[in-house]
Length: 403
Image 1 (cartoon, helix red, strand yellow):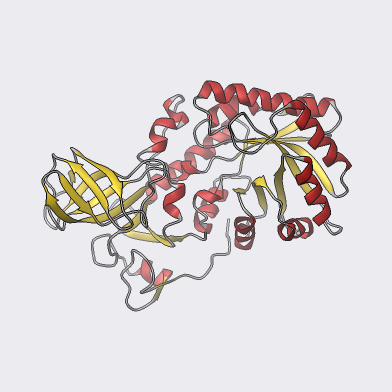
Image 2 (tube, helix red, strand yellow):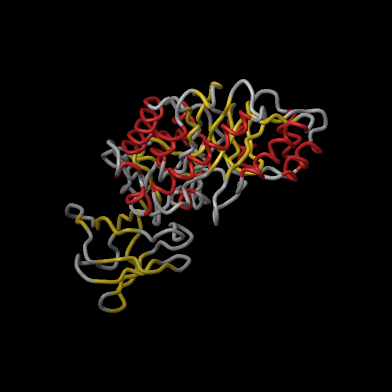
């Protein structure tokens, strides 16, 4: 799918790229740059083209096999280039979390959008209500949220999903009585159409808990059909990146209580996977298939001030630290093949430094380290232009992020 890509000029202000004289994206890629030819400066974040293609194809195959519509969560990358690749692979649309993300994705040309969140800003609500060139869904979980939406429509219309939550979780109604009250208010509110039920199961501790919760979500949808508050067609939506197999098993299918239905999966972090959070939590520890880590951060050893301690020039400004710290992968030097880094662990970060502690693989000042990351959602937001590398470390594309 061809999306509208904002213009990109790589120059002195582009983090990770060494371009004293500004050049366009196409000029930079056409130059045939490689990771090690001086066109990048450290720290730099790169994407592995083969891993990206594999992951996108893997989830496309999974959703097709299970009869799911797929709206990968765009807040992971906020990258129109990656949105286009996901849509080209068969995604139904793109999920977002905020009004600004919604507006950005629409400006790129995405025309099916699911806001996996409550929308309470009247400015955003009016825009949704009067945007006629896109299909937009968002969540409500209270009578007050329905009332705010209805008051902002100014003659327009919105389509909403009732969000169901779980104890100690995020947003979403907690009881059947609450679900009925919100759905009834939506049925009464002029310009508001309730089309289905949404949920987020990703914060639960294990797949058994996720399945139990998703059973409850389906039960709420069936209750609303029985009460005449969902008619003609039912939308079900869920799916973080940890339990999408459970979503397919429990919420998949073509009908709810006798009505035709569509299940929209929203998993987003799959697109790059990682070396930390999702290694253990991906459903591919339970089902056939796999995902490949696609993100690398490249940074130099800047100091070895004492035995068992090495400082690396990549910190909180450059790498995620909210759900696990970077993972040392390989050491690169000007001569010789890369060497696997063993015996060293990143224990903490400052703004621009990571602390490696341990002993094992020899590390010297000036060594270039290849680092894996944990939690891609907080990696992309730190970089505006990201080189994509082929298997020979050649720059074959540059993707952008718009947070």
